[in-house]
Structures are given as structure tokens and as C-alpha cells.
Image (cartoon, rainbow, N blue to C red):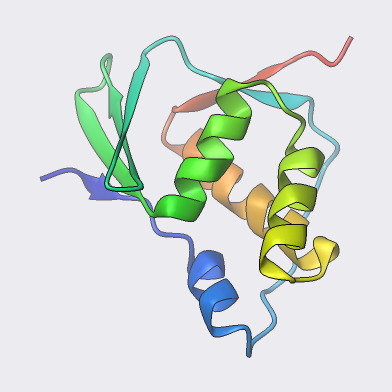
Length: 117
């Protein structure tokens, strides 16, 4: 019924055999969860509802971990570092993956930006 947020990158992490494409990092401020979004984790998977748009989104357990880090206001680099250590994937690769996932969330209006200052 809703749109599924699937990051090609997280599928690559599971395979660990292919290197993801580079995702540009323009030095944005840290992402912030939109006030129009409600979230729940079911069976390890993330389900997001954008109240203003009436859309539902789903993500896998890795996406749920990233989302929880954003809710906890952890910097995206720290989220990437934690996932890198857990999965044994180079931090630079995971940082690009996290940035891509966040960009997907932003493109659907699920995230905005907050100032670092």
C-alpha cells in the first residue's frame, strides 16, 4: 500500500561483494525528523507515516537503526561509525550508504535539516 524505502546500499552490505557508488556530501547540517512523521518498528523493520501527505514508508532493520539514531539526534557520522564496527564494513563505505538513505528520506519529506550551531 505504501511506498517502500529500499536502499540499494543496504542490500550491498549484505552481499559485501560490491562497492557502492559515491554519494556526494555537500556538508549539510544534520538531518532532523519532520514533525509530520510518525514511526514504529515492527519485527525489526521501520514503518513511517507522513501525516501531512498521507504516505506510508517501510525500511529494513538497518534503516530502522539509522532512523533511531536520527531520532536520538546522533550525528550521521556517529551512526555510520557504529554500523561500520558492527558489520565490519569500512567506515567510508557506510558513511556513503547512510548519506544515501538519509537523502532518500529527505526526498520524501520525512527529514529536514537542523543547524549544527
